[in-house]
Length: 163
Image (cartoon, rainbow, N blue to C red; front, side):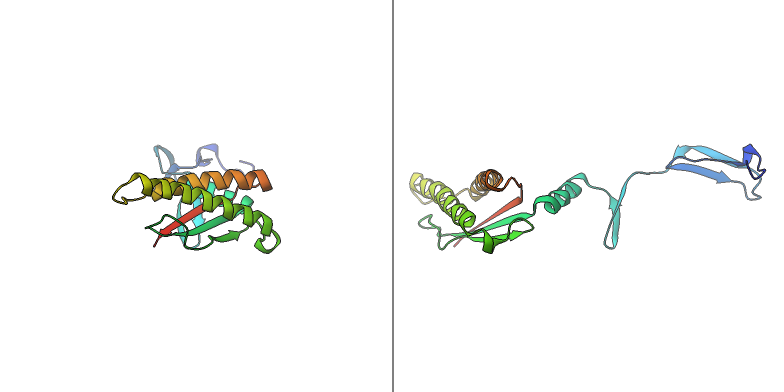
């Protein structure tokens, strides 16, 4: 309008507005229909809707990192085959936190073996151990323990392998 354009030729659209301009450019119509619009996430080569779960996980990883537990369980005895492997990314530097790791390994051993040995003892035929339940329980207990010790909430990923 400051440049002398008539108001009938000026449109200030909202996100998703569809503007139709006549072939001769003399008529502008704002249609009632709306085009899909909203937040879009650009992730590498892909473009798509921002998925709340993915964004929340990335924010959590950026703030507190991740802590992976890998435990090998003897399927006959329910005991750990060896000390659990621990992987920390963006959480704590493992070499400087040996005491914390020692305590975590003790908790893992006790938690996993208590559940698997009890399960095997109850089942006369040595039936299957519910590893999903054990993983969930282990993840929650280790997450709480790490928060008490560090005031950080890393993404805890327990992996239990039966051999």
